[in-house]
Amino acid sequence: MSSSGIRFDSVTVAYDGNVVLDGLDLTVRPGEVMALLGPSGSGKTTALRAVAGFVRPALGRVHLGDRDVTELPPHKRGIGMVVQSYALFPHLRVEDNVAFGLRARKVARAEIRTRVAEALEMTGMAAYARRHPRELSGGQQQRVAIARALAIRPAVLLLDEPLSALDARLRSGMLTELARLHRDLPDVSMLYVTHDQVEALTLADRIAVMDKARLQACGTPQELYRAPANEFTASFVGNANLLPVTVTAESVIFAGTELKTATTTPPGPATLCLRPHLVGLGDGPNRLTGTVREIQWRGATHRLHVDVDGHRVLADLGELKHPPALDETVTLHFAPEDAVLLGATDG
Ligand code: ADP
Image (tube, rainbow, N blue to C red):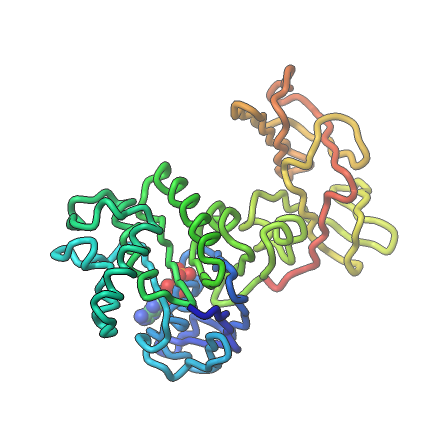
């Protein structure tokens, strides 16, 4: 199994003249897990299908490693794919489902046996080889689907919302399993489509944030969380307070109050992005005074909703011994280096 990355080179896809993927430029490095994260309809699956060869770009090229595969049929691309609905053959036993792609490729019988055993081992399904899909739970069926994709020893694995049919508990277990699989297969590049930020943050080396057919941002989870490039990214990756501010040559003004920030943007209207867990209660460097509208106790934390001059500010605090009362006036603060200024965006 040779390693190979994925490169989208200005890939545009349109259905009936409707552009649903608009000039995507993106590189997935060999061995990297890249999450395509975005709301429903943002073009994520379309991007993945362009790599698989199920849709033809109207413009642009798709490369796998140093091969331009834009014109290549799907079965010649050496790609494994896992979709949300498992898509197992109900009448075939687990081992035959896993062997399916190998038989189609006319792999020798002894080799098929080795690879099926290896793939089932890797996904923890070796004991279920003789069962039919209907005799398995949803999570087990998805493991078989993953085993089937791995059996062809793909250099690239495409996963399209692979956990969204599972319940929350299974999903978190499978997330751990997928992370382990990534460690076990350091040469396999993975493109992982999801609308779930937890999946993306947990699993991905880098995240490509999609909205309205376009790539909005791309970076490591930490980069996107700490220094989002725009409002969409700030609100889609983690929680964010997004406050309208005015930037002048000397300062940043929010609701008539002067704030200090570590970075700045050109003078004019801008948005201040402040992560709720970086907001403190009480006096501090940057003060925001407002009225408590809601208090949520979440076990280890308290979340306050504070109305500051008509803007809702969320503060995620450690568990408070003496939480404020509803409608009480409180002062919040944050450190200059924890506020990120976002320039005006084209929305
Ligand atoms: P996502 O995966 O982010 O939910 P998709 O890539 O599936 O988004 O879809 C992007 C847009 O393309 C959507 O508006 C969807 O309705 C449209 N679309 C997807 N597949 C087809 C198709 N086969 N024919 C027409 N429109 C499609």
